[in-house]
Length: 229
Length: 229
DNA sequence: TTCATAGTTAGACGATAACCAAACTATGCC
DNA sequence: GGCATAGTTTGGTTATCGTCTAACTATGAA
Image: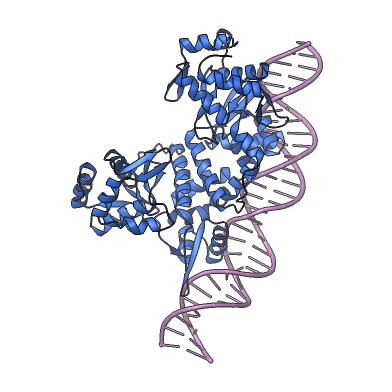
């Protein structure tokens, strides 16, 4: 009896369309502001605020304030895993066995996760950085090695300035489509910004999809292999 | 956006206390009549009937009629796994300053998860099978090795018959109490069934708790170490 | 200080859905 | 057939909850 009560309490938090959309929008491990989540869910800010309050006190989300913004994210990996298992049931029950459209494929390949690169390219990049000894992974934490510092400075990123800020330089972020980590944090954002500045990639209008240009594709691949372009 | 809709649809089915109690009551893999489930949920028969209708058309339960009785059970192992993961979140969030009672300890040690063994013993068994080279783990997938096939046949399980069925032979299932994987799938079910047949373990009445007998305990430990008993 | 933006709180409205009682259908037993 | 039990359907009541507008608080920028 008690088991069912707990079960219902958590499930009912996910059981509202507005809240479910917010949670789904955070499945990439990123953090979004209340306004962004309101837009994502298609409700007004006050409504979204009420939902976010419930999700936070319910333990499904955690909130961090940064200036006048409040960033909401999933509480932890366990919550993300739970959502994924529910999505799994929904997917297997959903009659729409339609093949993934081009939009879905593009999203899977490369997309923006708040302000950094996600999708297959994001994961590949993270793996390459770790493999080349530029980043050091220790459990949940990700750190920048000396070699990495030199590399990213050379790539045109001001690491020193970044270390003065409140935002962590490195963070790992679980990729929904690939189920593996990609690079988030200030460095993740800076790298993506640099990609755009270099003309390697551009962002599709009103979408999270990132398009790589042919030279960008080449530069990106080269970057993963050995040296910055 | 659409992802959230699907998510909410499934979650809202679980999000009602009456329905959640019914689902929780079926987590032991059994089937119950509408009346029994009504009593379990603390509602009248008509109310229960409406809930069961929703759960069935929603794809979370399946119903089989037997004479004038209608037996309801969870639709499949995927649904059971989803419920376990929700329970896991609920358990880790519910501070319940109270120390876990004996019932909770028993559940944590060994319980039925739909139709296979979960809890510490379940996880230990899975680890041992992998360590002994009976199962091969590759990311999300779990496979049976040649050595494993021989071992389980020797243990009294008809692997060949199992491979003909639609249900996957091996699957891993995340354990909420230990946060690690245990063995599910047809093989997981068969192993548990064999334990009961051998008198190694028995199921507590109206509960998911599994009790191991003294000889069962010994046989189980021996099985994890080297050879089948 | 003044204005603008981000977010929460308050209050009211409307829809959804959970619930039960009573009537109805179906199956089993005598 | 006649009665009892299992379950569903219908109709109507109630309450919860999601939603909005409007007013309020807080932080940042000029």
